[in-house]
Image (cartoon, rainbow over all chains, first blue to last red; front, side):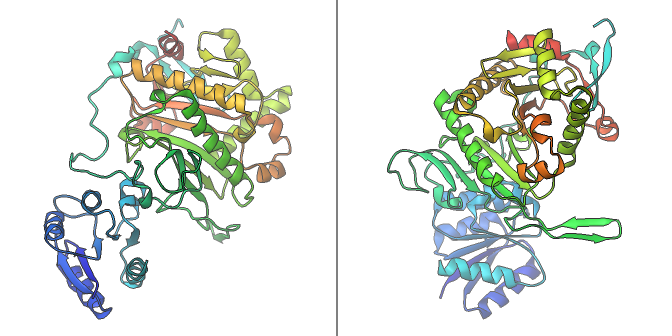
Amino acid sequence: MNKILIVEDEEALCLLYQEELTDEGYEVTTVRDAEGALDLLRRGHFDLIVTDIRMPGRDGVELITQIVGLRKDIPIVINTAYQSYKDDFMTWAADAYVVKSSSLTELKVRIKDLMTR
Amino acid sequence: MTSPSELRKDPISGRWVIIATERSKRPDEFRADRQPIIRKSSAVLFCPFCRGNEVKTPPEIYAVRGAGAPPDEAGWRVRVVPNKFPALTRGDTPVRNCRGLFESLDGIGVHEVIIESPDHDKELPDLPPDHVRDILSACQSRFRSIEAEPQYGYIQLFKNKGQEAGASLSHPHSQIVATPIIPKRVKEEIYASERHHRRTGDCLFCRTLSEETEAAERVVRANEYFTAVAPFASRFPFETRIFPRRHSPYFSAAGPEEIAGLGEILQSVLTKLKSILDDPPFNIILHQGPHPTRARKVWPEIDRISHWYIEIIPVLTRIAGFEWGTGFYINPVAPEDAARFLRG
């Protein structure tokens, strides 16, 4: 089973993503900040990471540059409420950029694409 | 100048500028403690534009690389890639929507990034002349390619260097954006040059260049193909325009010698700005006529009235309420002084 790490500071969204992506057949772990995510990545294996950008402490853009510094091959999806981070070329460390919406269709499609790449 | 300040009208944009010489500053007064670019944390370990990280960019659409070096791998000097997360995406002729006063258009366009060097810290002044020529040739090649797609209205080349100039990454790069419409500022330049041409039969830009050359006091540098001037009505301190001496509406029409000449003068102006202003943030913008297919339909005289040029704007002052509200700019450095510092 493919393992996904979700980095998201809002608890309700963590629960939603966990439920929806588990239904899609993934093993999902959620974490609420960048430090926690880096800690989990150092200790365990994940096949894909989904991260928010605006979070307390280190933001998601900084997190993904650090993840790529550790493991360049791990697919990363940015999942943010803001379009404006597309102007930041550091987001190119990610493989997909999804703007949050009430439907998780695009997020699921991007995850599936990257998992089958 | 006898008065401490002066209102000046830019003949090309028709924009008025206040040259406030009583507030004139020396270049070293613009030196300020600037934050290191770009993200504050020293823990950022990755740059998508650096050699070895080609896998994190979309596949290249143009590259200057050693013979036999495969695409999208190391071994390149200049790479052009599409923007990974573009605001405008490629498409056919956009659909225009009107609801009462509210008009909108499909967001089609082109957004490409020119990665100027595999080295993270090598800026244009630090590169060998043939490398700068390769960068300009890459830009020109992309312009020629986009000019073959008639659904676009304007092609813009720009470079943001430094956080204050809008750069999000310090690795040297430029960007090309093609928009489905002809931007208002571009039209304003065309209207001004059209009016001038109707009245005099001259190209406004050729005439400006000729008068600047004659006056000489604002000429920064010149070579066989280009002249760099501090414009008469500069909006910003050390603003510089580089005009091709040969009349031509489009950058894509520049010959190989002109590209080499442009590289030489651009590098020389940027080197001087870097030294006298302590490596300032700046924007470089290429101005030219609208997309040729559309321009020749709307302005049959476009080849006579439009003239491409490059604008360099060091970001040393802030645009604030007065400038936003009135469109007036207050420039604390007379362009004659700026030219003298840049020549020296």
